[in-house]
Structure formats: C-alpha cells, structure tokens
Length: 228
Image (cartoon, rainbow, N blue to C red; front, top):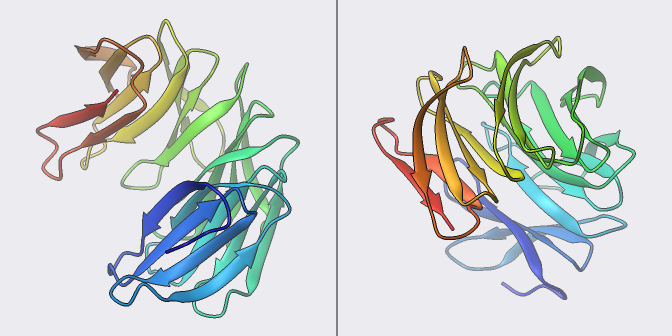
C-alpha cells in the first residue's frame, strides 16, 4: 500500500475488511486488506494526521493540518461533513453510537460535532494543544490529553469538566477501560498512569525510561499496555 509521502495514521474498519491510511501527501486512502488494492482516495489541502472509522464502518473521519476534520463515505469517498478549527486537527474519534465526532486541535480546543452534519455540539478549552481525544464506552464522557500537561474528562454534549488529571509532561495518549471506570494516560514525563475516571484520582503509575506515546487497555480491562 503505497502513498506519495509519509504515513501518519492507520485504522482498521470494524469488520477488518478495510484499512484506512492518512499521509503527508495530503490524502487519506481506504484499502482492501486481503488484496491490498486501493478502494477510494480522499483529498485534503494539508497533511492527514489522523483517521478513524465510524462504529458501523460506513464513514471515515479524517483530521488534517489544513485545519479541518472531515467525514467521508467509505465506499464512494463522498464528503459528508466538514468541520473547521483555527489550528491543525491532530485527533479524531467517533462516539460509540457513531452520532458524534470528537476532534482535537492545536488551537487548544477539543470539540464535539454531529457527524452527519458538521454542526458543533460542544467546545472544550485547554491551555495548549489537544493531542488526544477518546469517548467513554457509553458515549457520555470525552477524555482529552493536552500539551498543557493535563488529561481531562468532560461531559461530551455539554463540555462541562468532570475531572482534571495532572502530569509533569505533555499528555499525548488517553484510553478508557472497557467498563469506563478507569482512564489510562501516556505522557512525555516518562510515565503512564491509571486514574479513576469519575474523580480524577490516580490509582497506578507505570514508569518508563523515556516518553510514553501510546496506551491501551486489554479487552477485559485487567491489563494496561504502554509504548515508549
């Protein structure tokens, strides 16, 4: 699967049939996994930094350095909705029901939009770039990770802050446990940390010898993996 520039983001469709890629060649592309054939190509006016499939696999969301996030039809590549930030869009995530799209930007905000229309639903303010966004499993909360050295949890549709969790470095990765009780964060302070989502109370700290760029829970929520 070849692009004309570096590949910045990849994501599998929910059924595993398709792979989406985002590239510095200003395109996102969808490929058939088994044949490795390109299915559709979607163009931005800047690097495509992040991609995410909707839970039903019908749509693909892309975030770009052209300061837009866009929702596309996976099969035909038609643009469904376009959402504008004042900075680069570096993170996108669909809600579990596919109704909302969350975006994170270098304009210091995370925002929630109606995926089908691009209508803004809520607006959440950090003090620096928002590098990671993820919905809770029930779709009620949005977690964000920011260069302001905090992770925060918000009510997704109102933007009300629920909890704030502080690191000593930039927070670049966030993930909820499958039951939504815990949040794990990865930071450039060389740690991953687990927090109680409802209160922001730290419950575990995982030290590394360098920056932690990726975190995830196991499907049963018993284990955390962190990449450094």
